[in-house]
Length: 298
Image 1 (cartoon, rainbow, N blue to C red):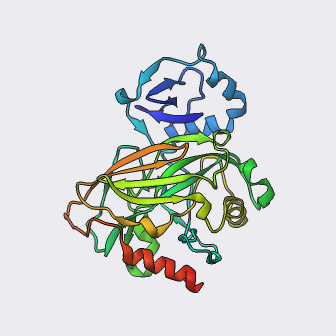
Image 2: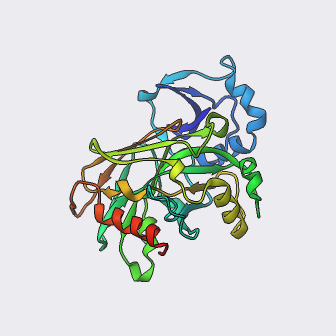
């Protein structure tokens, strides 16, 4: 199933070019986040109801609704850094984890707004995201799937700068984490390590990679993250990107991300300062990251 929130954060099922209203049978929270978390935690008892056409509500055209981020304010947005082999045959670099602000989450079709602060360039990083389905701590690698509810698209928008010595802060500006359009439940994905990720900016090819290039795979990532912190239903884990397709985002552009089984995520870009960079893959950045993998050092 592909679960969505739409309009005033009503729950629904994405069915091709239509949305099936679930608000009559789904639990309702005070916020969209609470509603989706209630669906996630109660899904075992809801799945059959959602699958029964007579039980669900009206079906409306997708073009007539406003999709919301399927997790509008997750408790945690955890991210894996430099987690792809960049098409090399080398071993991965040591595992690296950082956070994005939950306030960075952006609806599908929304607008990423570049902040009026000094940075070198603003990059897109198209990534598959794990959606956690239950609370866990010190999860063994062999049990990782028991804690995963599903998957969604995510873009780790990244302003590159020092920001007082903390370069990761440039990933947490408001609107810097578009996600969606839906949460695809894990039973719909035969193998999350065999997905194809594509990304375009104004129709220009950028990211084009498979998740089989992932260095630290999902069982290791889930186990490692949960050894540091408790994971909770509705938290998300961005699994990193292959930087060989990385490029800039700038004023007036439109971006599209598409992943096998996860649907298509779109967003726009606005920059009040109208900065510009070459409209192409950033080969210098791509080469730098690949060089680190090949040299086995950050």
